Length: 202
Image 1 (tube, rainbow, N blue to C red):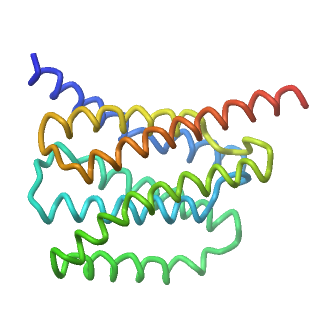
Image 2: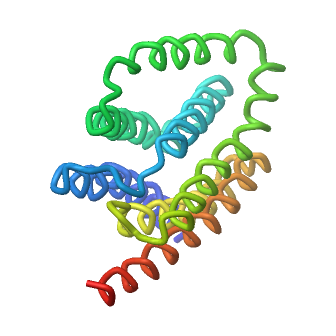
């Protein structure tokens, strides 16, 4: 029974993550605007994803516990390209690529560096959600922010809490997913609240 639930949790997480960012990407493409979408939030989230992936790979955790992260990283990169394109900052892409590649190699040089990076990872990832919340509060509109994307993110955090408890029991990872679950739900509810307000004013 536990093994079936674990398989379901891992499978559903992977499936949801394969589609997670597409509602946001499609919303931005349809509107040809990134209003409400925070560039800093995406960059922080991408940093958190890269650190988390590097940590899992370095310590040889089961592939099924982090297989979705390369997919999420690719989707964040696509979203970033659209953000840069619609804000006229395409020429800024190369420096970011260089920084991320250098960071990937540096944090994997020693376990002490990687452990420190992982400790900071929760703070970095939480910051990405808080920056997005701040952007919503400042504009007082949902803009082009997709509630579905954030809701799916909350779902995957919930499933990953379960899979972590059933497999590695790594406390750093567990704390990260609990914090992310709370913040993803918060962003989702905020987007839905502002979406309702936007409809009333229109």
